[in-house]
Length: 528
View (cartoon, rainbow, N blue to C red):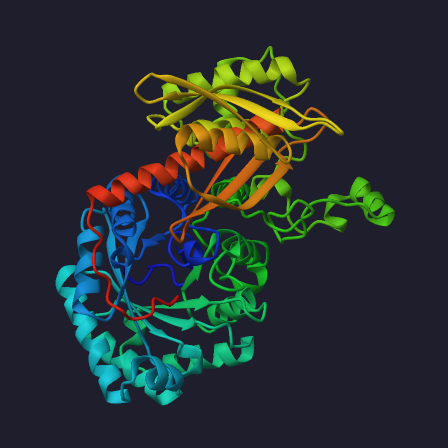
């Protein structure tokens, strides 16, 4: 990507699908990554870092699919400074409208000594070789000196200057472990701009982690010093304490343009829908008081605040909720609402459904409307998510179940499942509660041998007749899989979620048998 013609335009580089996905519990499958990539394209991000292609066959497949199917943003693949990584990344992104290879190599003394076991000269030489090899395969090359915030300034400047000469077009300065503070981080950017020849011909980028809660502050400080790309994630997800929060940095620039004088190409009205979609995909809810997209971000309880809001909104709100995609009052749909109204609302919430998927959602919407008095945005999101993650073609599907439970009586469950070949099987089991009994009955039919490591149920909307969302995470052969399902009956939601995760484990076993695993070089895979 060339240096922007507008010197006040900030490039938003989203790494939710790469660094964000490395956050424990946030892994995504191919379908989920594609859905998030479409949401990010709708949001207007400039660059999507789609993954780390050499990490696994699945990561390569995801990056390649995003490169082929998502138009608009630049699609980047991450690579360490070695030929195998770079060639794998180049193959993954080559079909993108705007491909990028993002090459990184650690430069700090602690990483050189203990991780790489390389001298400064060897590190600089490896960085140059990596950038040159990447440039032979792609015109848009980004280089990151990993752990730059703890690298000696003179050595950092030397490496940066040499990779510019080798063909790097974007220079990213990572605070990989969240060690920097704003004044310190700003001084690094200032030093590089003053000392590095040719840096004016490159985009200077920043990538901050949130270990001290300073990722957004550090990124904004760097922008004041002339950086023009921010690497960030939706909801700030990422390794350890996370990355720079995309929505926070974007709205800081938007709300305080009087101070920063900078702009982005982000459609801010898609911020909240994108945040919600990521929460639903990963099962990781944002805290209620999270800036911009938290449940309390635009809530006012104190009497003085409420009084001020009634008189003049700006007394206690510096942003309008509508500007980030939050409705002041949710659109309430009911059983008399039509397909067009539902389609419009689903689109507004950031979902891309085929006509067939929409028809199925509409059928479920009508059934739900007969059970509930009012249907809210969260209910519609749940219906859309259920359809997007429906186990079409899955080995087992739920036909029906019954369960009995009560004080002083033994809990039991009977389950009927349909196999992909059309046969129907029934079985029953007893357990310590209806969910345990259901899981045991499903195990008896499917032969599943998985261990449940996490189980959560929550309400997805308001009122006593709200839908319940069940999320189940299981472990099988040292690998974890997670699934979620929604129903007005939390027991049914639990059965659907467990069956979906069992289907995923079975599908993965089949893939593993049919597809050999690529060899991954033994170096540690860090977040750049």
